[in-house]
Image 1 (tube, rainbow, N blue to C red):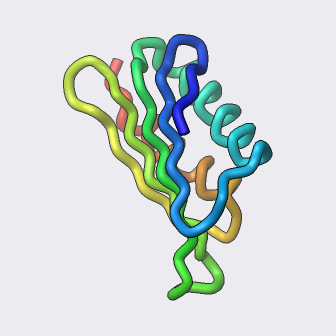
Image 2: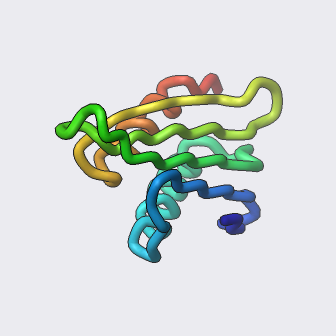
Length: 98
């Protein structure tokens, strides 16, 4: 599903489950947090997947940020969507070059 958050086109894809308003709110909140560190983000693609092979860290988050130049990508696995989103956003933030 596509959303527009402060002029950033966000594409949220869920694999194996239906997205809920709670998940959308988590993703939006984390995107807004990342946007505080980098103002030239034009797009964000977020892929959420439940992985049945690892019952402890079965929430997989893949995140691509569209910025001028090369896009940034991060992936994380965690026990909850919030933890996975936070871990992936921290990996993205470490890639920022000012």
